Image (cartoon, rainbow, N blue to C red; front, side, top):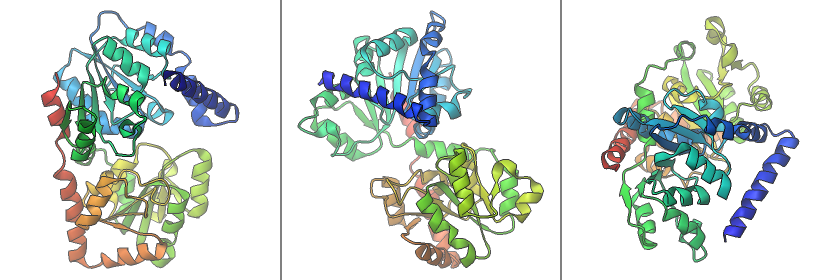
Length: 405
């Protein structure tokens, strides 16, 4: 099986090179960011105590961030190494002040992983949610480095729990402790003989509470939202935007803040075509936001704070592979809407049950559901359900730090 894994890694690298040749920006960044990684690793000062935190992408970073920052506070003498696999994480957080060293993670492999672990020499390793790599986990175990998985969640359909999953189970056996989001994940691990798990909950709840309680205000968005009801549409795709655009002629007093999931130049142009006359946030000023009815957030990192200015939230992805982070909106106590593909996301299922969220399949349904919330008591009930759901599930970070070895 290790032969097939090495073959997979070879094909993966070849695919990245091919995508870069054909102009894929993410593939180009993926390669460019790893080009001088060995030089950076060799420059690490000897004799330091270090802990390694790895995140696949930006979403996982935000999920693991409360633990990283709490760990730094608890162990100030340990330097923190933060790695990302995806450009969408590294390029946004490469200047994050909470870590001492920030790198792209070299693609897994016998020599690359051994070289990385030897250079970093971590006292502990933290992986956020997933992104299991065989050789990295193997060499961490070989060096007796404790490995912790933060906010892990498992499903019965994953290869770990199949008859052919022996190779994948080897990776899980390298983990010192799993900090799990839910009880079902614990049952799945126990069924394959792994009992080294703790039900801690999901650290995303801690992170969105941090953001909501912070002072990262946007005065231009505050001005934009001051004279009308606002729907904030986050992490949208074209299918979401088509549905949302129909709100404008039907609801004259509604304004929109649109944050597309991708912010490449081509993608932003596409969103502008869907919302003629929309104002790009990068070009906004006090005068222009007073005249605008639609603002497009054309850079990454503004969405989580922007939700505070909405009366309603629409979460994108529900007409594709699945919805994006709904907790970033729910924490502000507002009704949340999303498309029909939500079943794999526990928080969506929970909020639907608690009546803090509504799923819609058409613009007509969305218009009707927003209209329902003209009833003040119904709106208050949905808002309270969303806010209480988030506040009642915070505290995973504290549980994790309390049980670290």
